[in-house]
Length: 96
Image (tube, rainbow, N blue to C red; front, side):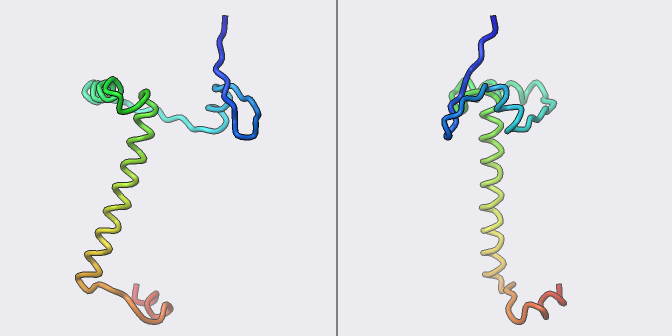
């Protein structure tokens, strides 16, 4: 017997989980060392994420947020160091 999980979408249409995944999400396969797999399993067991896929999505979001923070901090440092550009955009573009 085949069981399917059905998801209600916002527009009240019902779509099976496998169709949702195949049509609206991409999949990524990543080779892992045994050590990384153990870390992933431990984090899931500790409740950090619902499952391995959820953990991967959270890790990617976290990494993107950290990159954005680093970009802001770098820009603030450049501003504090006097590395500020001002003037005519066309002239600045020629200098770059």
